[in-house]
Amino acid sequence: MIRAFGSSFVSRVATQTRAASTRAFRPSMAISAEDGQAEVILVGCGAPNRGMGWYHAIQMLEKQCPSASLDYIVEPWFMGAGSESEAGKEFAEWQAESEAAYGVKFTSSLEDLPPPDAPRLALISGRTADNPRLLTECIAKGSKCIYLEKPGAPTVTELEQMSKEAEAAGVEVLMGYNKNVCKYVRKTREFAETVEGSHVTFVSNNAYENTPESLGECFERNAEGMLKNMAIHELALLVSFYDVSVDNIESVTADKEFSSMQTLKGPSGKDYTDFDKIKFTIKTKTGKEVSVAADRCGGTDSFATVTDQSGSEVFRYYMPDEEDKEHVKMLQDKYPTAMPYFFTQDPDYITVKERVAKHTVDGQPAEGVATISIAVETLKVAEYLTPMLQEQLK
Image (cartoon, rainbow, N blue to C red):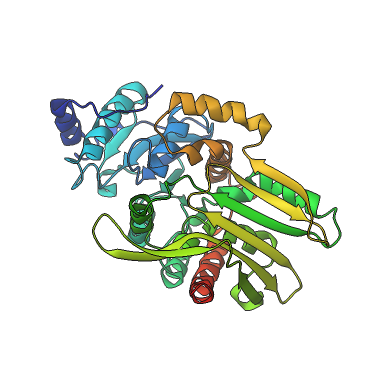
C-alpha cells in the first residue's frame, strides 16, 4: 500500500529519482501488461492526495481495475518546473515509493516512452488547456484508445478538432464522465419513470471552505468555470439521458435564491468571476424538463431528487448511499489528507476505467461510458449556459 503523505522529504532521494526517471526508458526496464490487460499510460498525475490523476494511479496500482496495467506515469510539471516546490518534493517521495513497490516507471515527457507492448490506453488527466497537445502526442505514441478527463478541452472548437484528429488516426476517445455509470443516477432515473409528471434534480457538492481565499484558489485552478468543471458531469447526464442540446433547449431559468456568483482574487492576484453555487432548470423543445444544482461549499455528498406533479419530493438517493458509506470511511482512514470527493465516487472511477481498459483490449462496447461526441455537445451546452446564467444573476 502507498501511504498518504505529509511534508517529510529527503532531498537526495528525490533528486536521484528525478534524474533517473527523466531519461528515456531502456526496453529492459519497461513493464509489460499481462494477457487481457491494456498497457496504461497516465498522463498528468498531479499532487499526491489532491490530483485526480494521482487517485486514478492509486486505483490501478492497487489492482482495482483488472484489465488495466499502469506501466507508465508521465508528469511534466512535478518532474519539471515544479519539482522544487513543496508539492514537487512530495510527488518525488511518492514516485520513489511507487517505483519500488510496483515497478511503475515515471517520466516527464511522452517522448521518453517506448513503443507499446500491448494495446495501449492513454489516460489524460492533466490541465484542461494542455489536453489538445497531449492527445496529439498520445496518438503519436501508439495509443489505441484514449480516456480523456472532463471537460476534454477548454473550448468546443478545440474538442471538435481533437475528435477529428483521433478519428482520422483510428483512435477512439472515451470520456471520464463517471456519473454516467453512478448508482444514484440509475436509481433516480428508474424511480422517475414510475412517477407520472416527475421532475428530476441532480445536485453536486464540493467541500471547499466558504472563504474568499479558498474559493479564489478554486476559481483560479479551475479557470474554465464551474459549468465546464464541477457541474460538467451533470451537464453530461442531461445530454446523455434528457435530450439536452443547444439546439433543443427551449428555456433556462436560474434559481436566484439558491445561486451565487462572485469575483475573487486567486493566488496569483488576478480576479476570477465564477459561480460558487448555481441552480437552474432546463426545458427542452421536445417536452423534457430537468434541473441541476451545484455548490462548491455544499459538502461531500452528491444526490438526486424526484418530485411529483405537485412539486412534492417523493424520492432522494445519495452518493454514497448507506451501503457505500463503510467503504468511504475505510478510504478516509487509509488516505486521511486526500480530497473527500475521491472516496464518494471511488466505485464509479473504477467502473469507468475498467470498462475502457477492457474495451481497449477486446473491442467490445464500453457500456455507459460517454464518447467524445457526448463531450462535444456537453461542452457546447456549458458554453451556451454560462453567459445566460451570468446575465440572470446580475
